[in-house]
Amino acid sequence: MTQDNSSQDKAAGQNGGGDLFNTAAGWVLFAAGLGLGLSILSGKYFHGDKPERPEKLGYVIEGAVEESGGGAAEMSMAEALNTMPAAELIAAGEKAFAKCQSCHTVAAGGANGIGPNLAGVMGGPVAAKGGFAYSGELKALGGTWDWDKMNDWLKNPKAYVAGTKMSFAGLPKVEDRAAIAMYLNSIGGNLPVPTFVADAAAGAPAGEETPVAGETPAAAETPAE
Ligand code: HEC
Image 1: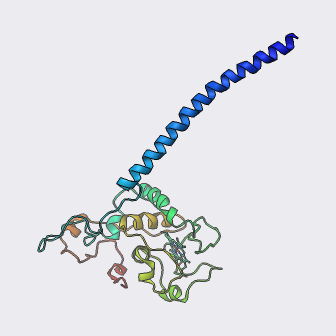
Image 2: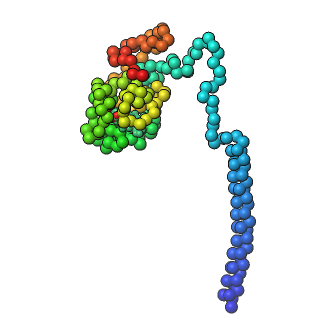
Image 3: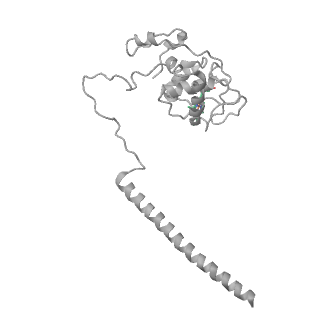
């Protein structure tokens, strides 16, 4: 009989614990519900989850010249390649390459995916990876992937090579394009990084690219737009 008693005691104890647990669980549920309600409410009024920015920030004063940051005075590829030590730029490029990974492998000997494997692409001939079915348009581009060509390509592939199979909107920031090109160059590429002379560029009239020492004549190439 003692056994029965003890089991009853146990059951009672469990019930007691259960009540306590239920009460606590109730409060947790209540708090969660309250939080959810509040977040729904605040979402209604503040659109915290969908930031809506006007297309143009601020307003344009007529006659005023845009100083910088308007995209008009974007730094050159040569300058972007020299904004930080090579190792840091390569690391930044590896990060930014996340945008490309769904279609490209980069390790030497990596498989072609939706896009070709990119090992050794910098300094190499355009559209030349074995076993990949390039578009006729990219094949027709010809030449080798130097810094400027890669810059133009990554900025807006479809604008640079109309009809390309690469469905990628492009990288609007020259810093990102430089970082990724540096990263690609670090894997099987061997292009020398162009030197950038700040003074020469500072004296240049706006909108005109000055050939910088160390840059190849290909820099004068006009991007097809
Ligand atoms: C949606 C898939 C997709 C994404 C994302 C993508 N690419 Fe591509 N990429 C392609 C395809 C497809 C081609 C082949 C294009 C053609 O044949 O016209 C290509 C071609 C290329 C080439 C030319 C390779 C050669 O052998 O000449 C380079 C360089 C390249 N991509 C770099 C990049 C980089 C860098 C990114 C990320 C910033 C990127 N791609 C993002 C699909 C993609």
